[in-house]
Image (cartoon, rainbow, N blue to C red):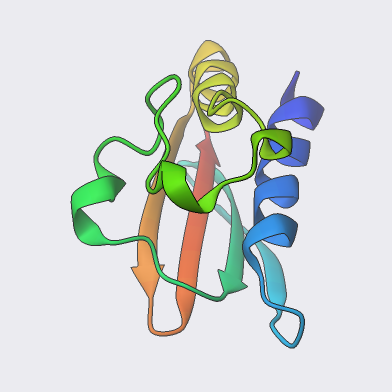
Length: 105
């Protein structure tokens, strides 16, 4: 299931990164667990959408999405998987995009 969560995050990063953009994956270990971060350049997620980004069927801007891009379930599924493993997932804007962090104890 963790493989599915990672695949969902990578799929989103690929989909939302412009052609000349970049995706960075990093892993940090500490005494309280391991954090995997996936950061992609591109359009940042507006602040008002960040609190709902993991809600089922939520899409930050439905008018900009084609029907083939999914139903708004990927991040909700990812959060459920991470929480089922005792972890946490978060998202934050960066100067040139967005960063998702998955922390497992």
